[in-house]
Length: 69
Image 1 (cartoon, rainbow, N blue to C red):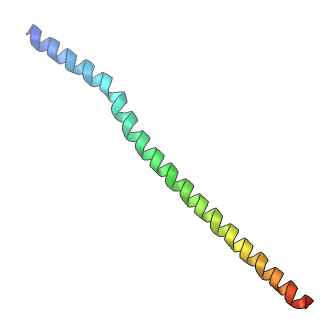
Image 2 (image 1 turned 180 degrees about the vertical axis):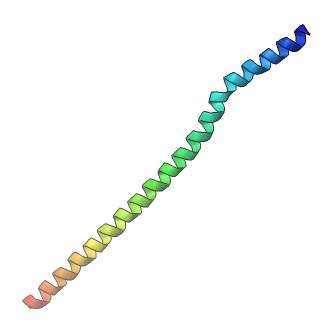
Image 3 (image 1 turned 120 degrees about the vertical axis):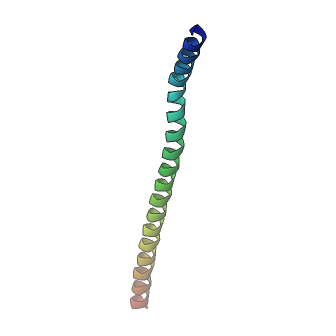
């Protein structure tokens, strides 16, 4: 009986000490990937907006040049 109690107690201690490691590794990997995806999407959006702005500015410049000639 003493061996069984010791074994159960050891299993309980091992399980208790393992819990933080399991939760930390799972959450960290998922969060980092989601964050990177959000950053990539944000950068793409920013790049598209800037490209549209440059295109619009170029169009205005061309119109000014055409009027001036």
